[in-house]
View 1 (cartoon, rainbow, N blue to C red):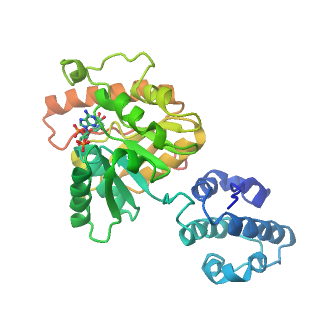
View 2 (view 1 turned 180 degrees about the horizontal axis):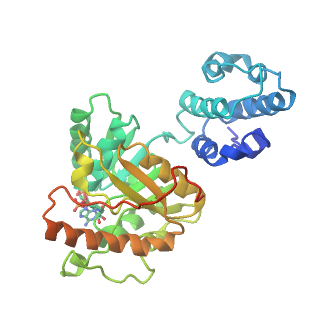
View 3 (view 1 turned 90 degrees about the horizontal axis):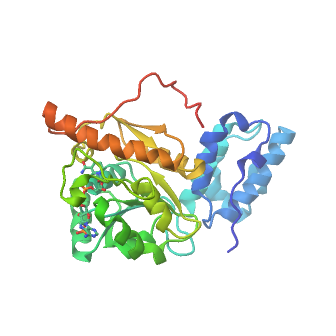
Length: 332
Ligand SMILES: NC(=O)c1ccc[n+]([C@@H]2O[C@H](COP(=O)([O-])OP(=O)(O)OC[C@H]3O[C@@H](n4cnc5c(N)ncnc54)[C@H](OP(=O)(O)O)[C@@H]3O)[C@@H](O)[C@H]2O)c1
Protein backbone atom coordinates (compact mmCIF):
# COMPACT_ATOMS: atom_id res chain seq x y z
CA UNK A 1 0.00 0.00 0.00
CA UNK A 2 1.43 3.38 -0.97
CA UNK A 3 2.04 5.59 2.00
CA UNK A 4 2.53 9.33 2.11
CA UNK A 5 4.45 10.84 5.02
CA UNK A 6 2.43 13.39 6.93
CA UNK A 7 3.42 16.97 6.33
CA UNK A 8 1.90 19.01 9.10
CA UNK A 9 2.88 22.30 7.56
CA UNK A 10 0.35 21.49 4.91
CA UNK A 11 -2.37 20.43 7.34
CA UNK A 12 -2.77 23.89 8.72
CA UNK A 13 -0.24 26.37 7.42
CA UNK A 14 -1.43 29.13 9.70
CA UNK A 15 -2.62 27.44 12.83
CA UNK A 16 -0.06 24.72 13.45
CA UNK A 17 3.24 26.40 12.96
CA UNK A 18 3.45 27.75 16.48
CA UNK A 19 3.28 24.21 17.86
CA UNK A 20 4.97 22.59 14.93
CA UNK A 21 7.69 20.80 16.80
CA UNK A 22 5.40 18.87 19.12
CA UNK A 23 2.80 18.06 16.53
CA UNK A 24 5.43 17.11 14.02
CA UNK A 25 6.98 14.74 16.52
CA UNK A 26 3.73 12.84 16.80
CA UNK A 27 3.10 12.88 13.10
CA UNK A 28 6.48 11.29 12.39
CA UNK A 29 5.40 8.23 14.29
CA UNK A 30 2.73 7.39 11.78
CA UNK A 31 4.82 7.64 8.66
CA UNK A 32 4.88 4.38 6.77
CA UNK A 33 1.93 2.80 8.54
CA UNK A 34 -1.22 1.53 7.02
CA UNK A 35 -3.02 4.54 8.41
CA UNK A 36 -1.37 6.62 5.69
CA UNK A 37 -4.44 6.86 3.44
CA UNK A 38 -6.70 7.61 6.39
CA UNK A 39 -4.35 10.33 7.53
CA UNK A 40 -4.25 11.75 4.02
CA UNK A 41 -8.04 11.90 4.03
CA UNK A 42 -8.10 13.62 7.39
CA UNK A 43 -5.35 15.97 6.30
CA UNK A 44 -7.47 17.07 3.38
CA UNK A 45 -10.43 17.48 5.67
CA UNK A 46 -8.42 19.37 8.24
CA UNK A 47 -7.06 21.77 5.67
CA UNK A 48 -10.53 22.46 4.34
CA UNK A 49 -11.96 22.89 7.81
CA UNK A 50 -9.17 25.21 8.80
CA UNK A 51 -9.90 27.32 5.79
CA UNK A 52 -13.67 27.35 6.05
CA UNK A 53 -13.83 27.29 9.85
CA UNK A 54 -17.03 25.25 9.59
CA UNK A 55 -16.38 22.04 7.65
CA UNK A 56 -16.39 18.88 9.73
CA UNK A 57 -13.23 17.00 8.81
CA UNK A 58 -14.88 13.70 9.56
CA UNK A 59 -16.89 14.05 6.40
CA UNK A 60 -13.67 13.60 4.47
CA UNK A 61 -12.92 10.26 6.06
CA UNK A 62 -14.17 7.19 4.23
CA UNK A 63 -17.29 5.65 5.87
CA UNK A 64 -15.40 2.51 6.91
CA UNK A 65 -12.86 4.52 8.83
CA UNK A 66 -15.27 6.99 10.39
CA UNK A 67 -16.12 4.88 13.41
CA UNK A 68 -12.47 4.40 14.28
CA UNK A 69 -11.45 7.96 13.58
CA UNK A 70 -14.41 9.47 15.46
CA UNK A 71 -12.88 9.48 18.94
CA UNK A 72 -9.95 11.43 17.54
CA UNK A 73 -12.28 14.14 16.31
CA UNK A 74 -14.27 15.25 19.33
CA UNK A 75 -15.57 18.53 18.00
CA UNK A 76 -14.80 19.95 14.61
CA UNK A 77 -17.52 22.53 14.18
CA UNK A 78 -15.19 25.47 14.63
CA UNK A 79 -11.56 25.89 13.62
CA UNK A 80 -9.60 22.71 14.33
CA UNK A 81 -7.49 23.16 17.44
CA UNK A 82 -3.89 21.96 17.21
CA UNK A 83 -4.43 19.48 19.99
CA UNK A 84 -7.23 17.77 18.07
CA UNK A 85 -5.07 17.21 15.02
CA UNK A 86 -2.34 15.87 17.26
CA UNK A 87 -4.73 13.51 19.06
CA UNK A 88 -6.10 12.38 15.75
CA UNK A 89 -2.70 11.52 14.34
CA UNK A 90 -1.75 9.50 17.40
CA UNK A 91 -5.16 7.82 17.29
CA UNK A 92 -4.68 6.86 13.62
CA UNK A 93 -1.36 5.26 14.50
CA UNK A 94 -3.00 3.15 17.18
CA UNK A 95 -5.71 2.01 14.76
CA UNK A 96 -3.10 0.62 12.38
CA UNK A 97 -0.04 -0.17 14.48
CA UNK A 98 1.62 -2.62 12.06
CA UNK A 99 3.46 -1.62 8.94
CA UNK A 100 3.70 -3.87 5.90
CA UNK A 101 6.77 -5.76 7.19
CA UNK A 102 5.28 -6.58 10.60
CA UNK A 103 7.13 -3.80 12.39
CA UNK A 104 5.22 -2.23 15.27
CA UNK A 105 5.46 1.52 14.81
CA UNK A 106 5.38 2.17 18.54
CA UNK A 107 7.84 -0.60 19.44
CA UNK A 108 11.36 -0.09 20.77
CA UNK A 109 14.06 -2.71 20.19
CA UNK A 110 16.97 -3.00 22.61
CA UNK A 111 19.90 -5.09 21.38
CA UNK A 112 21.89 -6.50 24.29
CA UNK A 113 18.77 -5.80 26.33
CA UNK A 114 19.71 -8.74 28.55
CA UNK A 115 22.34 -6.58 30.28
CA UNK A 116 21.87 -4.07 33.09
CA UNK A 117 21.32 -0.93 31.07
CA UNK A 118 19.16 -2.48 28.36
CA UNK A 119 17.02 -4.27 30.91
CA UNK A 120 16.52 -1.01 32.79
CA UNK A 121 15.32 0.74 29.65
CA UNK A 122 13.12 -2.25 28.74
CA UNK A 123 11.42 -2.09 32.16
CA UNK A 124 10.83 1.64 31.88
CA UNK A 125 9.49 1.59 28.31
CA UNK A 126 7.28 -1.44 29.03
CA UNK A 127 5.93 0.32 32.11
CA UNK A 128 5.11 3.31 29.91
CA UNK A 129 3.00 1.01 27.72
CA UNK A 130 5.32 0.71 24.73
CA UNK A 131 5.95 -2.66 23.07
CA UNK A 132 9.54 -3.70 23.71
CA UNK A 133 11.68 -6.18 21.79
CA UNK A 134 14.70 -7.45 23.69
CA UNK A 135 17.57 -8.65 21.53
CA UNK A 136 20.36 -11.02 22.46
CA UNK A 137 22.93 -13.19 20.71
CA UNK A 138 21.01 -16.14 22.15
CA UNK A 139 17.28 -16.58 21.81
CA UNK A 140 16.94 -18.23 25.23
CA UNK A 141 18.61 -15.28 26.95
CA UNK A 142 16.37 -12.84 25.13
CA UNK A 143 13.27 -14.81 26.09
CA UNK A 144 14.41 -15.04 29.72
CA UNK A 145 14.96 -11.29 29.87
CA UNK A 146 11.57 -10.64 28.26
CA UNK A 147 9.93 -12.94 30.82
CA UNK A 148 11.71 -11.08 33.62
CA UNK A 149 10.31 -7.76 32.38
CA UNK A 150 6.81 -9.23 32.00
CA UNK A 151 7.04 -10.49 35.59
CA UNK A 152 7.59 -6.90 36.75
CA UNK A 153 5.11 -5.41 34.28
CA UNK A 154 2.42 -8.09 33.82
CA UNK A 155 0.55 -6.19 31.11
CA UNK A 156 3.78 -5.22 29.31
CA UNK A 157 4.16 -6.23 25.66
CA UNK A 158 7.68 -7.62 25.68
CA UNK A 159 9.23 -10.23 23.44
CA UNK A 160 12.72 -11.67 23.18
CA UNK A 161 14.43 -12.32 19.85
CA UNK A 162 17.93 -12.76 18.55
CA UNK A 163 19.53 -9.40 17.76
CA UNK A 164 19.16 -9.77 13.98
CA UNK A 165 15.40 -10.33 14.23
CA UNK A 166 14.91 -7.72 16.95
CA UNK A 167 16.63 -5.09 14.79
CA UNK A 168 13.95 -5.41 12.14
CA UNK A 169 11.01 -5.22 14.51
CA UNK A 170 11.01 -1.59 15.63
CA UNK A 171 11.58 1.82 14.08
CA UNK A 172 13.91 2.70 16.96
CA UNK A 173 16.73 0.26 17.78
CA UNK A 174 18.84 0.92 20.87
CA UNK A 175 22.33 -0.60 20.97
CA UNK A 176 23.05 -1.75 24.51
CA UNK A 177 26.16 -3.89 24.21
CA UNK A 178 29.60 -3.04 25.62
CA UNK A 179 31.48 -0.56 23.43
CA UNK A 180 34.08 -3.08 22.27
CA UNK A 181 31.30 -5.15 20.66
CA UNK A 182 29.51 -2.29 18.91
CA UNK A 183 31.20 -2.71 15.54
CA UNK A 184 30.62 -6.46 15.35
CA UNK A 185 27.03 -6.10 16.57
CA UNK A 186 26.18 -3.40 14.00
CA UNK A 187 27.81 -5.40 11.21
CA UNK A 188 25.75 -8.40 12.31
CA UNK A 189 22.41 -6.57 12.05
CA UNK A 190 23.19 -4.28 9.12
CA UNK A 191 21.21 -6.36 6.64
CA UNK A 192 18.18 -6.26 8.96
CA UNK A 193 18.06 -2.47 9.11
CA UNK A 194 16.02 -0.46 6.64
CA UNK A 195 15.90 3.14 5.52
CA UNK A 196 14.04 5.32 8.00
CA UNK A 197 14.98 3.35 11.10
CA UNK A 198 16.79 5.09 13.94
CA UNK A 199 19.68 3.42 15.73
CA UNK A 200 20.43 4.82 19.19
CA UNK A 201 24.02 4.59 20.39
CA UNK A 202 24.35 4.45 24.15
CA UNK A 203 27.89 3.10 24.13
CA UNK A 204 30.78 4.62 26.02
CA UNK A 205 34.33 3.88 24.84
CA UNK A 206 35.62 3.10 28.31
CA UNK A 207 39.26 2.17 28.54
CA UNK A 208 38.20 -1.17 30.07
CA UNK A 209 38.00 -2.25 26.41
CA UNK A 210 41.82 -2.31 26.38
CA UNK A 211 42.26 -3.55 29.94
CA UNK A 212 42.58 -0.07 31.44
CA UNK A 213 40.21 1.64 33.92
CA UNK A 214 36.54 2.63 33.58
CA UNK A 215 37.30 6.24 34.56
CA UNK A 216 39.00 6.92 31.24
CA UNK A 217 37.97 6.63 27.60
CA UNK A 218 39.91 5.54 24.53
CA UNK A 219 40.07 7.50 21.29
CA UNK A 220 37.98 6.34 18.36
CA UNK A 221 38.96 7.17 14.80
CA UNK A 222 35.47 8.40 13.92
CA UNK A 223 35.32 10.62 17.02
CA UNK A 224 32.84 8.76 19.23
CA UNK A 225 31.07 5.46 19.61
CA UNK A 226 27.96 7.04 18.04
CA UNK A 227 29.93 8.22 15.01
CA UNK A 228 31.46 4.77 14.69
CA UNK A 229 27.91 3.40 14.48
CA UNK A 230 27.01 6.07 11.94
CA UNK A 231 29.91 4.90 9.75
CA UNK A 232 28.59 1.34 9.78
CA UNK A 233 24.80 1.58 9.30
CA UNK A 234 23.28 1.44 5.81
CA UNK A 235 22.43 4.67 4.01
CA UNK A 236 19.12 6.11 5.15
CA UNK A 237 19.40 4.71 8.69
CA UNK A 238 19.74 7.54 11.20
CA UNK A 239 21.94 7.43 14.28
CA UNK A 240 21.21 9.29 17.50
CA UNK A 241 23.33 9.36 20.65
CA UNK A 242 21.50 9.19 24.01
CA UNK A 243 21.22 7.61 27.49
CA UNK A 244 24.99 7.33 28.17
CA UNK A 245 24.77 9.35 31.39
CA UNK A 246 21.83 7.46 32.92
CA UNK A 247 22.83 4.70 35.37
CA UNK A 248 21.31 1.25 34.97
CA UNK A 249 20.48 0.92 38.67
CA UNK A 250 18.24 3.97 38.57
CA UNK A 251 16.47 2.72 35.48
CA UNK A 252 15.81 -0.62 37.12
CA UNK A 253 14.42 0.91 40.33
CA UNK A 254 10.90 1.23 39.04
CA UNK A 255 9.55 2.63 42.29
CA UNK A 256 11.72 5.74 41.96
CA UNK A 257 11.97 8.54 39.43
CA UNK A 258 15.22 8.40 37.48
CA UNK A 259 16.12 12.07 38.07
CA UNK A 260 18.58 12.57 35.19
CA UNK A 261 18.95 14.65 32.07
CA UNK A 262 19.62 12.85 28.81
CA UNK A 263 21.80 14.71 26.32
CA UNK A 264 20.46 13.68 22.91
CA UNK A 265 22.44 14.41 19.77
CA UNK A 266 21.93 13.68 16.09
CA UNK A 267 20.07 15.08 13.10
CA UNK A 268 16.96 17.07 14.04
CA UNK A 269 14.10 14.74 13.15
CA UNK A 270 15.49 11.48 14.59
CA UNK A 271 16.85 13.40 17.58
CA UNK A 272 13.37 14.70 18.36
CA UNK A 273 11.94 11.18 18.16
CA UNK A 274 14.48 9.92 20.66
CA UNK A 275 13.85 12.94 22.89
CA UNK A 276 10.21 11.85 22.98
CA UNK A 277 11.30 8.45 24.31
CA UNK A 278 12.90 10.14 27.31
CA UNK A 279 9.53 11.63 28.20
CA UNK A 280 8.22 8.07 28.74
CA UNK A 281 10.43 7.63 31.80
CA UNK A 282 9.47 9.56 34.95
CA UNK A 283 12.29 11.88 35.97
CA UNK A 284 14.19 11.75 32.68
CA UNK A 285 14.42 15.01 30.79
CA UNK A 286 15.72 15.15 27.24
CA UNK A 287 18.11 17.96 26.38
CA UNK A 288 18.81 18.86 22.77
CA UNK A 289 22.57 18.34 22.53
CA UNK A 290 22.88 19.24 18.87
CA UNK A 291 24.74 17.31 16.19
CA UNK A 292 25.98 13.75 16.54
CA UNK A 293 29.61 14.87 16.93
CA UNK A 294 28.71 16.13 20.41
CA UNK A 295 28.46 12.48 21.45
CA UNK A 296 32.25 12.77 21.91
CA UNK A 297 31.64 15.02 24.92
CA UNK A 298 28.59 13.15 26.22
CA UNK A 299 30.29 9.76 26.15
CA UNK A 300 33.30 11.13 28.06
CA UNK A 301 31.00 12.45 30.81
CA UNK A 302 30.11 8.85 31.67
CA UNK A 303 33.74 8.05 32.51
CA UNK A 304 33.73 11.10 34.78
CA UNK A 305 30.50 9.94 36.44
CA UNK A 306 31.99 6.50 37.09
CA UNK A 307 34.91 8.16 38.88
CA UNK A 308 32.51 10.36 40.88
CA UNK A 309 30.44 7.28 41.80
CA UNK A 310 33.55 5.65 43.21
CA UNK A 311 34.68 8.75 45.13
CA UNK A 312 31.26 9.60 46.58
CA UNK A 313 30.22 5.94 46.97
CA UNK A 314 26.80 6.35 45.36
CA UNK A 315 25.62 2.81 44.81
CA UNK A 316 22.68 3.65 42.55
CA UNK A 317 24.89 5.70 40.24
CA UNK A 318 25.06 9.41 39.48
CA UNK A 319 23.36 11.29 36.70
CA UNK A 320 23.59 14.84 35.39
CA UNK A 321 21.25 17.84 35.34
CA UNK A 322 21.65 20.92 33.15
CA UNK A 323 20.42 23.96 35.06
CA UNK A 324 18.86 27.13 33.75
CA UNK A 325 17.08 25.65 30.73
CA UNK A 326 13.78 27.35 29.83
CA UNK A 327 10.67 25.24 30.54
CA UNK A 328 9.61 25.09 26.93
CA UNK A 329 12.26 23.81 24.57
CA UNK A 330 13.11 26.74 22.32
CA UNK A 331 16.29 25.07 21.07
CA UNK A 332 14.82 23.14 18.14
N1 LIG B 1 25.44 -0.09 33.01
C1 LIG B 1 25.28 1.21 33.06
O1 LIG B 1 24.98 1.78 34.13
C2 LIG B 1 25.41 2.05 31.82
C3 LIG B 1 25.19 3.42 31.91
C4 LIG B 1 25.27 4.19 30.75
C5 LIG B 1 25.59 3.60 29.55
N2 LIG B 1 25.83 2.27 29.49
C6 LIG B 1 26.17 1.68 28.20
O2 LIG B 1 25.14 0.78 27.85
C7 LIG B 1 25.69 -0.33 27.16
C8 LIG B 1 25.25 -1.59 27.88
O3 LIG B 1 25.76 -1.56 29.19
P1 LIG B 1 25.52 -2.80 30.19
O4 LIG B 1 26.08 -2.40 31.48
O5 LIG B 1 24.09 -3.23 30.14
O6 LIG B 1 26.45 -3.90 29.50
P2 LIG B 1 26.60 -5.43 29.83
O7 LIG B 1 25.59 -5.86 30.84
O8 LIG B 1 28.03 -5.73 30.12
O9 LIG B 1 26.29 -6.10 28.40
C9 LIG B 1 25.05 -5.92 27.76
C10 LIG B 1 24.81 -7.08 26.82
O10 LIG B 1 25.77 -7.07 25.78
C11 LIG B 1 25.80 -8.37 25.22
N3 LIG B 1 27.16 -8.78 24.91
C12 LIG B 1 28.13 -9.15 25.75
N4 LIG B 1 29.23 -9.52 25.05
C13 LIG B 1 28.93 -9.38 23.74
C14 LIG B 1 29.63 -9.62 22.53
N5 LIG B 1 30.87 -10.13 22.53
N6 LIG B 1 29.01 -9.35 21.36
C15 LIG B 1 27.74 -8.88 21.35
N7 LIG B 1 27.02 -8.65 22.46
C16 LIG B 1 27.61 -8.91 23.65
C17 LIG B 1 25.22 -9.33 26.26
O11 LIG B 1 23.97 -9.77 25.75
P3 LIG B 1 23.76 -11.28 25.20
O12 LIG B 1 24.78 -12.16 25.86
O13 LIG B 1 22.39 -11.57 25.65
O14 LIG B 1 23.91 -11.18 23.72
C18 LIG B 1 25.00 -8.45 27.46
O15 LIG B 1 23.87 -8.81 28.23
C19 LIG B 1 27.19 -0.15 27.13
O16 LIG B 1 27.59 0.35 25.89
C20 LIG B 1 27.45 0.86 28.23
O17 LIG B 1 28.57 1.68 27.95
C21 LIG B 1 25.74 1.47 30.59
